Amino acid sequence: MVKEEEYKIYLFRHGQTYHNRDGIFSGWLDTKLTKKGIEDAKIIAIRLKDKKIEVAFQTRLSRSKDTLRYILKYHPECKKIITDDRMIERSYGKLSGISHYNFIVKNSPKSYDIYHRSYNIPPPKGESIKQVEKRVLLFIKDLIRFIKQNKVNVAISAHGNSMRPFRRYFEKLTIKQMLQLENPYDNYFEYNIKI
Picture 1: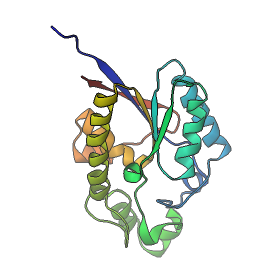
Picture 2 (picture 1 turned 135 degrees about the vertical axis):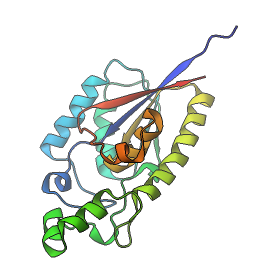
Picture 3 (picture 1 turned 90 degrees about the vertical axis):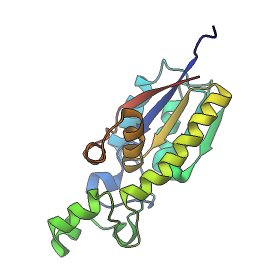
């Protein structure tokens, strides 16, 4: 009988950014890590220090890349970094760059709740969580195939909204549970892929 092999996915959110700190819809806008965001990344790095990471995934946004850079300082065994925007943050469209406060003042708290956490309703010219989930699921399908073919452990430097469908898939959550998730800036989630 062939023994089953197991490989790991280490999923984490980028550290706190200036837009996170200031309550601004960033989406696909590039926003840098704050001092606290750098500390968040260093904490994740320490938590993952003794794990084996052979391939890492990031998005084009600097917050994903910069967080990953801190993690990989402890992982000389990681020989490949892949940029894949299917797990990029949700696009907030016309809301990008607007503060949550200004949006609520101009519109209403109810409008904020609809655009901020609605599964089906996208912000003007932006993406709904359902649309984000669709592209993240395509990424997951290819990721699992990649891990099985290459027999590697992977790290994924993701974003708050792209992590929600990722966690829903692996943790078997309902849509309601997924929408209530708050992803930490300073920790990671570990998932097993059996071959």
